[in-house]
Image (cartoon, rainbow, N blue to C red; front, side):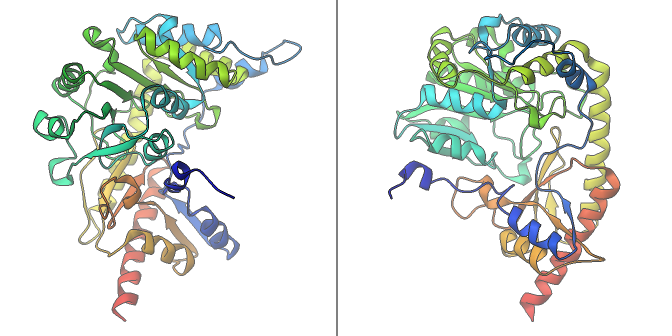
Length: 400
């Protein structure tokens, strides 16, 4: 049987591909500590569950293709609360931020078209681009420069006749970079001047540590035709399994094209939209402040623990809940297999996401990992301790 060359060009997720090895490690009686996936252990707000419990209709019908009215209005009101005016017609309910990205890319990419993305980047971007027949042209960054990418000198030489869009994540996954107002303005200007879409993944908007106000590329009214925002309740409200997100744009033609896909997939889940609307309606800045404070505690615990490991390099994240780390090993994927198959300390081992899958440039990231700091500080410190012990054991075995 023949399979699509597009899907065969895609790789497995570096966050999830080691799951069978985790299962095998647990079968041996080992406890596996997780640094690999952005699954927060912060409680999902009770408003979500209460909205589902209060549902009193005799069946669960299809939602309208654009989204349930109460959800669209809740998202509109949320944006108004951060100073951004959008209408419900500028919003489409999606299956998480992932579908919002897929819809946007499907609408704008033809075979052979290119998208610029700063690397390292969220690996699923590669899958979403490849299945359209498009290609990623990476914007190189370095940890020494704090993974910053917003400069004309770095971006404009990469633009060519096949470039259709720039994708950014702000705050950044996996780097934790938070763009300054000047950098956001520059990215908008570049997109406008070159006739490109600027797809801004903003699912971590409130998780920033420098006192920044919540920011969105939608604040630039002069770029209404260019800007597409991807949003989600997954990380904002610690509800990753709800799979409710939104694609937002004031580009009327783009939204009309996107509606074809939304109608084709019928609707996003009705009850999950109602639960998500309730969270938007009932939670305020005090909630976000408490979440930020907790993630900052976790970030600080990871940074403190990493600083104790020899020959490890990283840049302290400014937002989101990830960081990239360079390890003193030849190949972090090999190290991950070793940690799950051969290593343990007091019955425990650790998982992370190997770094190569976060790069589009062949060969880059092989000695890097992404850490997600989404569990409590004590567990994070132990996970980093296990990482250090595992590195030492792995390197000792190689020398032997």
